[in-house]
Image (cartoon, rainbow, N blue to C red; front, side, top):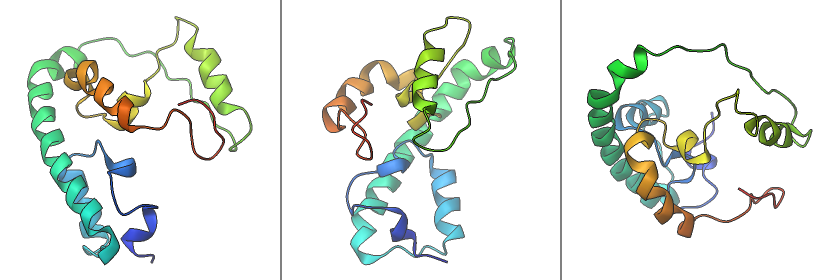
Length: 141
C-alpha cells in the first residue's frame, strides 16, 4: 500500500482535499494508519485546519438547509462516463448549457459540505490562488 504522501504532488496547499470535513479526513488518515510522509506534514496540517472550518460551516448548513433540501423533487441523474481525453469534459460543458439539466460548479464539487454558505464569497478568494487551466491538458478550469 502506498504512503499517503504519494497521493499529493506538492507538500503545500490542500490539493484535492480542500473541502473535506473533519470526520472524513480523520477516516482517511486512519485508513492509512496516519502515515504521512515528513515532506507532506505541512499539507496534512493545513488540510486538518481547513477540515475543522469546513465541518463548522457544514453544521450550520445542515441546520439551515437539510430539511428543505430533503423535501424537494429529485430527477433521475444523467452520468457522463468515458475514458480521459475522450471528450467527456466537452460533453459536460455542452450539457451544462441545457437548462433542463442541473450540474455542479467546480466549487461545489470541491466543497460539497459547505458550498451553500461559502461559494458567494470564498470563490473569489480561491480564484486568485487557482490556476486558470488544468495542468494535464491546459484546458480552462
